[in-house]
Each structure stands twice: as C-alpha cells, then as structure tokens.
Image (cartoon, rainbow, N blue to C red; front, top):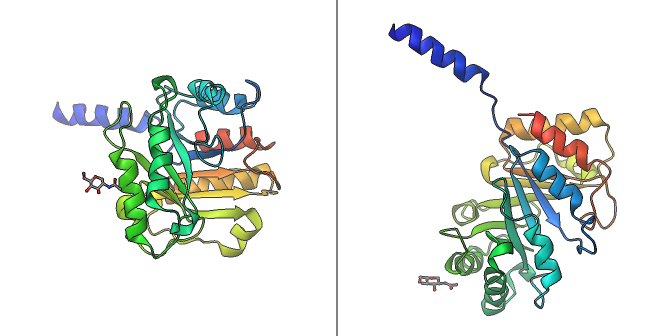
Length: 254
Ligand SMILES: *[C@@H]1O[C@H](CO)[C@@H](O)[C@H](O)[C@H]1NC(C)=O
C-alpha cells in the first residue's frame, strides 16, 4: 500500500513539467515612444508565464526627471508574477559619490505603485571595491520597495568579478557583456556562482540551432539569466530579429 502510494507519487513527479530555470534579463533602454516599442517584451511576458524576466528600466541613464509617460509604459509591464523590474543606476566604476547613487535609488523607490520597482541594477561595477559596492547595495536595501521586504540587486561588471565577496551582497552579477564572437573566444566562462550569474550577449550571428544549444548550455549550467540579441549597434534600443526565437528557446530548454 505504502509502496503503491510512493510509486504513484514518483510517477506524478516525473510528468510534472520542470519550470524554466534560466531567466531572461532585459536591458530595456529604449524610450517608449509608442505602445509598440515595448510590445515584444509584454508579449513574451504574457506568452511565457514560466519564464522569469528581469527587466532593467532606464528612463535617462538613471531615473532622470519625473516622466509620467515613461512610468505609464512601465505600468504595462508591472504586476506580472514572472516580472521583476529594476532601475538602472550608473556607478562610474565605484567613483560615483554614495549620496548621488542614493538619490537615484530613492527616486526609483518613490515611483507610483502602478509602476513600482523591485530594486536596482548597478552598472559599471568595478572589481576590488567591495566596501563601495556594499554601501551602494545597502542604500538600495535601505529604501522602501512597495510589496517587498528588500531590494533586488543586480551588479554589472560585464566581466568575471573575481572576488566572490560580491556574491554575498548581490542577488545577481552580470559576468559577461560583450559580443557573441568574444563569448566564443572566452568560453567556457568562469561559473563560480551560476545561480547568481548573468550573461548579456550582442551581435549574435549563429543559426537557430546554435541559439537553441547556447540557451540549453545556460540552462544546464544553472545560469540565473541571459540576454542574447543579434543587433550589432544600439543593442538595447530595440529587440533584435532573434528575440522571439530566444524567448521560445528559454521557455523550451529546461
Ligand atoms: C543602511 O541602514 C543601516 C541600518 O540602519 C545603516 O547602518 C547604514 O548606514 C545604511 N546605509 C546606507 C548606505 O544608507
């Protein structure tokens, strides 16, 4: 009887689909001129509820002055269970004064609830400056984020950070941001903390099969998130022609 129950449970577990593990990180640096600008993203979010999206919003290389048009566009991406919105803050490789960084953070944290964010994306992260980046991160965590107990924090050195201390205070670290050519030159990339690592790749010129196997390799290694675009300039100003295939692959290759 017990054995039969166990077998039934095991059979059940075997057929339950495994959710996509590697999420999609989206540097959303385009300005929402019309509702069509961000539509490919909204479509992907609603079509693939099992894929986790980490969306970096960036009104003006930071929060910029209050822009209700921008915030209204963010509201269209807001409230989905599979979306985490973070605000772009530059750090000038650690040289940016804490009070300036804090001001950007507090501006984002004060956005209206319909477009409220979950945390911060710190660009231009510099290795070897853990105390500086701990302070920036603390500033993000100290702010009040509607509906959350603490900020979600992503650091972007764009390369292997080396120092594993950074992984103790960041949720995710982008350890590759470069071309697909460069990726091929460097691969295999160091994966000291795959569940907290993210890769952002531009100028992808491989086949659909190559794209699918890249995504599959990310899933197998347990990478937290990735972004691949075939755009060769203004990579984050629009979605590349491979966007839909990439999202489908992330959804499929679990
Ligand atoms: C964050 O809050 C802690 C505890 O209140 C405080 O010690 C720290 O100075 C704060 N840091 C920043 C950067 O605001």
